[in-house]
Length: 145
Image (cartoon, rainbow, N blue to C red; front, side, top):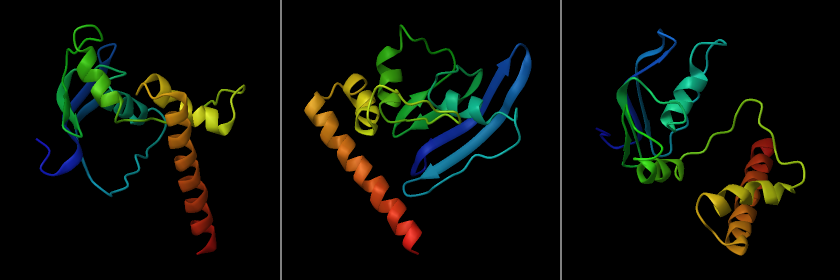
């Protein structure tokens, strides 16, 4: 399905209360590409992103992320391993994201790898430090141009 794409979506359809929210969405993202999903409120942006992580089940189509496939009818119970494999590769930042106020920036970045990937606190902190460095260096580089 992927034809070299890291993310491939084919014929994705989602319905909410009998109303079509996504109608046959196709999308490919290759390694190194940056994609923005834009549109007016209510156009299905969040539904698309949630479907790509199977946080919202979809009615038809297929999603493949880094070789892991999602399909309609998957279940948190019977497909837990497959869903976990995708969710370990996909991250979402919601429009109104909320950090844990009792954590530092490091603690917020390290929290998910501890729980989702099962990293030790030391390994999660090291990974979080590296990511925060990348963010700082990237932001500084962009501002200098």
